[in-house]
Image (tube, rainbow, N blue to C red; front, side):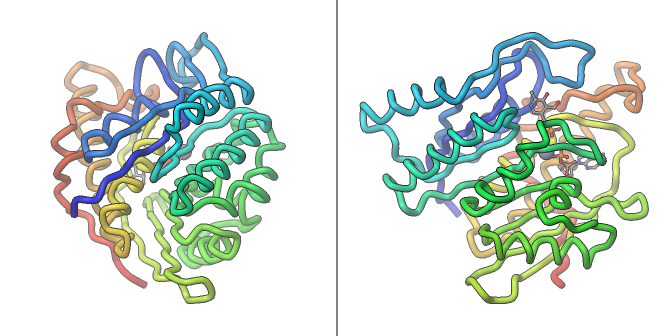
Length: 297
Ligand code: ADP
Ligand code: PLP
Ligand code: ZN
């Protein structure tokens, strides 16, 4: 595989640590992509710390950046990647950006991580759920919700693999041909469920990957996962299962390393959220060793 592309990545920036663009740009570059980051916020550190400070980009400021690119004929992108978005007005502007980029490149792939919350808790304003459901999901080519987000977007409660597969089918009907629910917790086990509807109306090809849950809480993993899924699924467009195996393999090697490093330094890894060892894992990003295999349904 060799196909790469030019990615516009609209996500958070943190000065210290790895979430948002800080966890997506470097791996995509390592996989050979040109990445143009727009920082939707610039914070000192991620919001899991006791405090943070910084700036938030508004919809008009995003428009300005796009207008600048447009004025120089620089709007050709193969992919757009979006993650955490904090307001309806910013999300509405992103929709305009997608439409504009699709008028320049009708084949533009939009990879959307519909970041809304985790473990039963919403961390964006409630109005965003409706906008994601009604306006964003229909434009997405690939969607990468976690369990909670898949529930919010479909109205389904996901308590089993079957529920996860059904949620994917509902999401396909709304727009995206590729859906990856990045983790479902069932009985202490993590399960990734992937689904590729190769043509509208066809039954989607679905698979699962069983992941051993590491007893620690990491931030930035969802953002990294979505970036890797973009990177690999573009190289293997007809093998979402292979792309997911590669992405999961990188994640597992990186999380192991992160845990080991913290333990070696004498930290209790269950006590607070850990910063991922992204730069130290570059070999695992370039050449992941696939240990966890996808099982087709
Ligand atoms: P988000 O951060 O968006 O909620 P997930 O929790 O689904 O996303 O994490 C994305 C990926 O990161 C998962 O598919 C899994 O591979 C990996 N991951 C995250 N947390 C853990 C963990 N505690 N143990 C093992 N893998 C994890
Ligand atoms: N963006 C910011 C600013 C954050 O603070 C966080 C988490 O704290 C994230 C994004 C998302 O992290 P994750 O990939 O773990 O969902
Ligand atoms: Zn997430």
